[in-house]
Structure formats: structure tokens, C-alpha cells
Image (cartoon, rainbow, N blue to C red; front, side):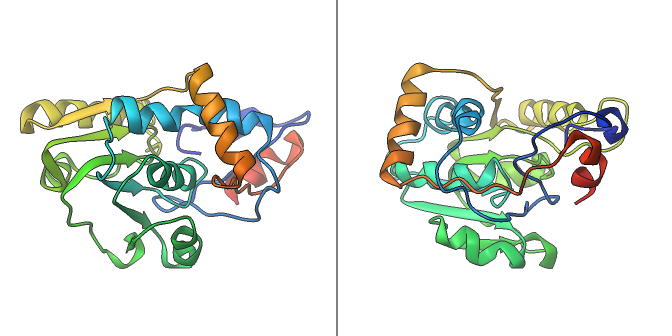
Amino acid sequence: RGGVEDPERFRGGDAHQDERLDDEGGEHVGQAGSGPRVEIRTRGLHTPALRERGELRAGGRVLVWGASGGVGHLAVQIARLLGASRVDAVCSSRSAAFVRSLGADTIIDYTQDQTPTGPYDVIVDTVCTASPALVSQLLTPHGVIVTIGALGTGHLLGPAAPMARRAVGAKLRGFTSRTVLTRVNAEDLVLLASWMEAGSLRVTIAGTYPLSDAVGAYQR
């Protein structure tokens, strides 16, 4: 959702919407009985985000920002599967039970102005709303924040604006900030498929909509 500035562009035809992001926390509706192929393809980025870009090691501490959204709810589970000793999650109270069921240890409710305390070895951020000052306080000396997405602000640059601010802030404050774009890696796809077949990785989807209802789906 964050990267879409003009939902009017999507009128007409047929389309599939598999998640909706409710600001910083996200929202889940329903659960897929098995992971659809499109989900495996596009969510392959979570493994490199944590293992490669985030350099997560067994026993590491992880924070997932936007933990109940389409991206975040998978990141919580994958952090656990990769051996994180602690996984904290930023989401709303209405999604708290769902996110805990995925393996989160502590829920930070952004609707109540709660703030993580850290320190974390890896932060996976799907919304890019935390200031550079806060990020620098949350990371361990060798910690990494991996930004996967950002909420659009309505400005010309959309979600690129907060991501650019984070990159500049990281240089000024001396913390490591990396971004991850969707990528296809055969090894990661095999690993994801094995987790899904074993029932270790759950995929939750919001629903499907015709493209003619894209504006309404976006607003939901």
C-alpha cells in the first residue's frame, strides 16, 4: 500500500490483492491453507533481508516493524526459523494475538505510542517511519536495519522520501542501514517451500478483489 500514491490508476479489469497494510502495524484477514505460488515468488526477499543483508546469526535479537502486514508477518516467522533468540514486533493491539501466534515475544503497540527499547541485532522495517535518532538507539554497535518498504507520504517522491532520509541519517549517526528489493534466489525459494510444506511458515492473505474494485480494496 505504501508505494501506491494514486489508486485511481487501477480501475478496470481483474486483479489480485493478497494483503493490505494498515499504517505501521498492518492488518490480517484469513489464512491461506497453503502458500500460493505468487507468495513464494515475491516473499523470497525475507530470507536475504534477514540472513544476508541483516547478517542475522543464531541467537540474534530481531525487531520487525509493521509485523502484521503482508511482509512483516512472514518476517516474524522467518526470523524464528533462522534461529533468532528474540523477536519483538511493532503492530496494533488488534493484531497482537495474531502476531504472537507467529512467534513474536513482545508486542509494541504503536497506536498507544509505545516504542521499542532494544538493543537489536537486526531490525526489519516495512514502513520506514522511525527517525534516524531512534534507530541509532535501538541497534547494537554492529546492528543493521534492513528497510523493505516505506509508507507513501503523498509527496512527489512517495515512499522514496523516507527511505532517502534514513540513508542520510544512517551516515550522519553512524549506523548501518540497508535496503532490499524483491529478488529471486533458487536456494531461498527451496528453503521457503520446505518451511511451508512442513507447516512452519504460515501465509495470511486479506482477500481477492476484481480490478474494478481496486480503489475500494486499497481503502480497506
